[in-house]
Length: 408
Image 1 (cartoon, rainbow, N blue to C red):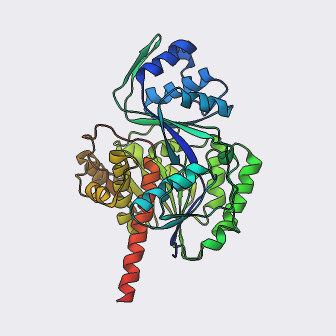
Image 2: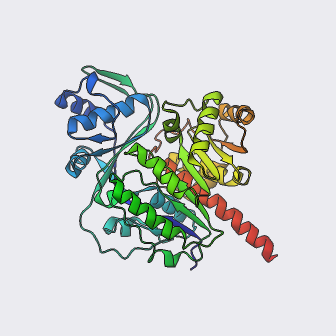
Image 3: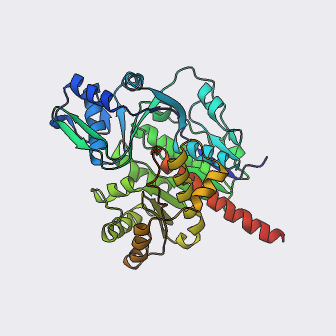
């Protein structure tokens, strides 16, 4: 079967923790965490620092990633809770979501173990000649709902919104295996390629090697293939700009979430404040130097740039697939996806989109998110990955329709 959607490279084994407020409070007591310990951090040297970082992200309602000093800290955290094992990584979750919509794809994984084989849908062709690994490096996912009160000792706050924090130290992520020769041979029919971020890489020399190998791989694609890159919150902040510089010449669409957008302006962006969003979007777009930039948030999805007007359907599919994951977690089906597509859009988001178009000079297109406040047990991890899968699905459908018109 010809695979017209390609994805790479990040794959990981996620431990999705079951939320338990009492266990959170027990950690605060046992580690004697005070207000001064609650700080934003992307790295942690011990358990107290790790939990101080987790509590910061929970209190401020922003997503975050933390790389502990040892993998044992990740394992200890996972073992403290009940958890479900799933597969993560932007490219991997996007490929899985496409598989649930019965769309075939080809994926280069960055690890190879029994979970990857057992949990991957049959629609996803795994292109990897790596030997099977016995060692599992868990990516621990802590997600919580809005309105949860956490009160213990000096710590007292109510979570302002649904949120997720990712904690991992994964050798296969820190040293992502990118194979331009082996994987590149399988890409001759690919029309759309999704590239995940390099956000967990910590060594500058390895980053440069990864970027060189990625550019070699992208040259294997057909010239007319569309390349989408899903951005990330980088552990090493300066690496993000370097990645954009190295790959912008071949990236057609750079996609990012609201937290990643906020990093360009150095402060949190109110997603319904049209002036704040307009300024942040224009600042980011001028800096990344790509043809088209997409920003997706809890309220809307925007496309800005030369191809923005051609992304309406892709944005709609991205919002719908992310909304389906929010509603159903890994239980995505075509029927549930179509049900989400028919759901009502957020009224305040529609108004926002009407008003922001006059504030941005570049071409802009936008789609409002669905009204999902009725969902009692939302999934908040992997929404950006599902959105990226939806973008690919929308572009693939558009390409299929064009091919059908030519056949007629």
